Image (tube, rainbow, N blue to C red):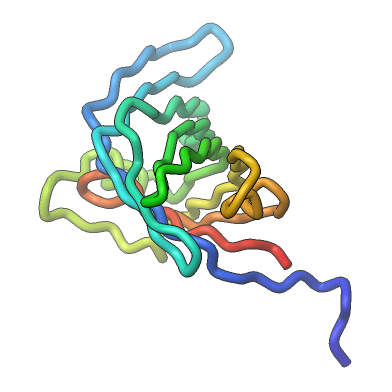
Length: 159
């Protein structure tokens, strides 16, 4: 018997970001560190949309004393038809100390398997009324991966 209240997921889009060098404020009075990372470029695509990430958005994670990245990221996406979509992404990245150190030091050619860490997001989209406003009427979850150049997120619409 199928539970009608059990959510189903539908792939919506993938966003790939190339990030610039991070800045940090270490030793915050409340604990941890604050980072800032600007988006250099990116692209996105899915079954119903495709386009580029407008440069100048970014990520501002708080790195807790226990090593957990609590990220707050904000980007503007531009769909091929010209529609601008605002994406606010929050979530967590964590793993063992050894894996987090490898993620921190990623250089071109390096890889850390996404199976070795947890990178999940709960995005919010804002979009003008029209063809893509379905983004602002659904709940989404994101599963991410840290790459040598930035981040890659796959977003799923909760049905």
